[in-house]
Image (tube, rainbow, N blue to C red; front, side, top):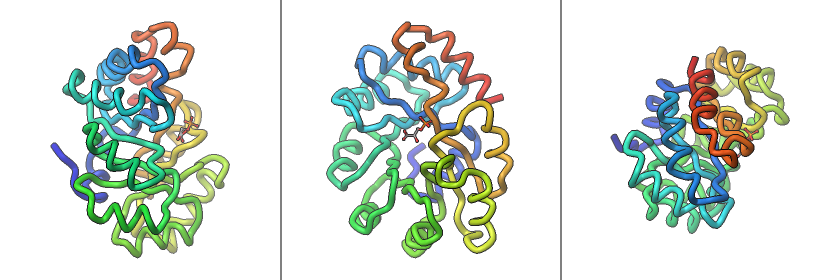
Length: 210
Ligand code: 3PG
């Protein structure tokens, strides 16, 4: 299953509803962490390009965790995207949506989920024919009231709110009609990762799925 279009990502994400956002510091954690999340029912994984281990983490998860759909996050430039795709990323996520990134994304074989926080940014994404965006940073950009306000005038855009989403507000976000799924790091707390508590992470993933 290879999503090619931004709109194809919607179908994938609608089934899972939660995308773990993972920042891998120690490469040894990459595969067991991905396995723990897949075991808990969360198989779409966003690996942020914020650490030296990130690209290798993507490569290893793609090679060794066959059930995982691995993408790259924190894609700030076309060069980041090229490296991530070469590592095997099947989708790309950016915190914002620059013209340069959107122009380049039109030519990529994997979809981009661009970040938006305002109506103007959302319109710029819609102008490119994209119908699915990350709403970032969700909680500090207005949270659920902001998503509800955007739903009327921007009915053609579906969102993945990320940033400040957790188990406590997950259900409320998912109840918004224009929210397809949410993203967040809460399912893989650094303390559990450092402790190698993979069963604990599987439990958090199951709770998020539930
Ligand atoms: C990020 O890119 O850092 C994500 O938005 C994750 O945010 P969170 O840590 O608040 O879940």
